[in-house]
Image (tube, rainbow, N blue to C red; front, side, top):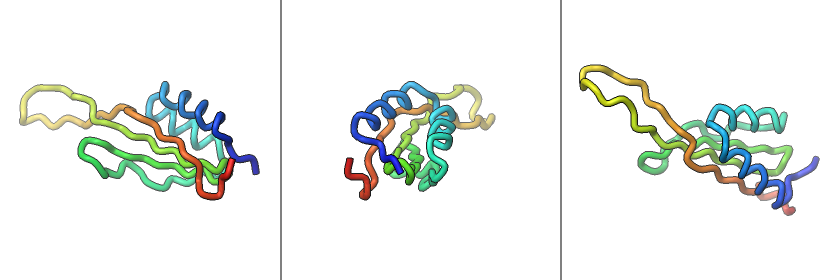
Amino acid sequence: MAYLNEREREKLLNDLSKMTFLQAKRRLRRMDRQAKLAVYRNVQNTGEWITRYDLVGKGTRVTLIEEERVGHVGSPDIRHEAEYELARVVVEPLPENRT
């Protein structure tokens, strides 16, 4: 089992920061077969939706933080689907990863 070291985690952070939410999610699921979805679009802070993946095989936890995109302004009678954009990415080691 090859855990990601600090340099590899930093590279992953830079790569994910340039992607959309769906691209980042796809990349994480393909990176590790043991990837576990820990939290999906949970709201802990106002205006921030958090999705967290634990990449057990890589010894890394990745948190994708989304913010609601300012949507269509129009009639209040019309319901619009919310749109989100990836605002920040947090990559940190799991407790068993000591690299």
